[in-house]
Length: 221
Image (cartoon, rainbow, N blue to C red; front, side, top):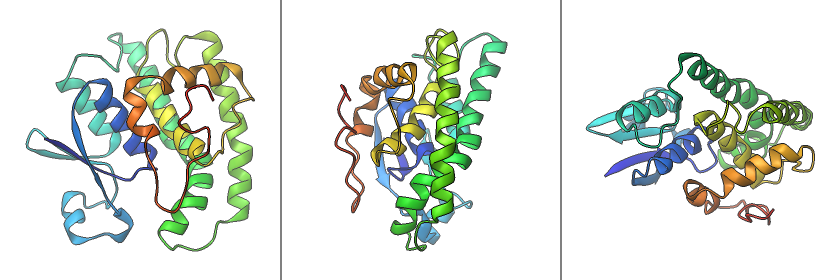
């Protein structure tokens, strides 16, 4: 059995879960309180971060490396295009969401409002929250610009770039931090993603002490 050590509101874990589900790979999800840095978990990943995937006798860490491994070893339902230029664009967008979007939005909203309370790291920083609320508007507009030109974020086909973006936005949507009325194209794109079978387990997530927004699991949000 494939095992994924994860935290429910980690966008990096969600991205891996979506790829696993899209490729129809059954996985056992193991909740990991990674912030406690237990010696057992640190033996799996010395960086002390999730996700960590146990598969094929290997222990893999880093969501990018995991997704690349899954793509190369399970070619059905591809998450990457065959054309080198198109693959480069997918990788650029994955990096955009996992780096820039994460730093400017996810870490400012989800981490401040949820993670700090869970990890007992203090109260939310109001300035960070304010900056996150401002930054997400730019990112939604940029996504709308991409979707005005393509069916999916990186082109005509669904790719891991879409899952990377959806992973972050789903974490934010859990606490109602996304203004879905800002851009109709982004809302329609997310509705398509949200309706995929691969997304079902994401919509079933519940973090103890934090109830999801009422519309979170609603496909007609």
